[in-house]
Each structure stands twice: as C-alpha cells, then as structure tokens.
Length: 135
Image (tube, rainbow, N blue to C red):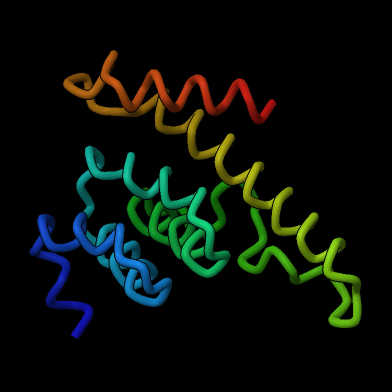
C-alpha cells in the first residue's frame, strides 16, 4: 500500500533510485505527501528523471506539497496538445519543453522558499548551475 510509505522517509528516499519507473513514481507520490519542504529538493531532482511519468508525478507531488494544483499553469500531461500520430521527434520535443519549464519554475520556487537551514548547500549549487544550463 503506497500510503504506508508516507511516514517512512528513509525508505522513500531509497526507492527514488529504484530501477523500475513505477516504483520511483510511487516513491515520488509518497514524498509529496510528507509535506516536508526540506524534501522538495528530491522532487525537483525527480523532474529530471528519465521516465516521463516520474517527472509528471514529481510536478504533481510538488503541487500537492504546496497546495497549488495549477502551479505555473503547466499542463498535467506534457503530450496533451500533441496529436497521437505526431512523429516521435515532436513528442520528445513537447516532453522536453514541459520538463524544462517545470524544472525552471520549481527550481526558482524552491530557491525563494527553501528552509533557511538548507541555504547555501550542495543542492543549491547544483540547482543554480542546472537552471543556468537550461536557460
């Protein structure tokens, strides 16, 4: 039961590195329901997961954590506006653009609102560098 994960942060964090996308997606879901802003960094990293479903779940988890279901007006499905018969390149481009927009928006949000104890750490350095690369 994925709801049992919510209180087990140590297990959730281990599952974020699991080789199976569905397991990572469940871990991201549970992480969002911890309502622990210090853990949002892991959700932001999950926005760069290789699996699109994990990236979407990371966005959804951040929306849940922040109580903002329409954060940054990002569509729930990166492929919503892409025709089903569109070439693979068009589908990949839409997913890439959504991922970039989500990462930049949530990264800026995190930098503005992160807990004071988390400021100036290694994650912040990585995040700022990654955001500059994507701009």
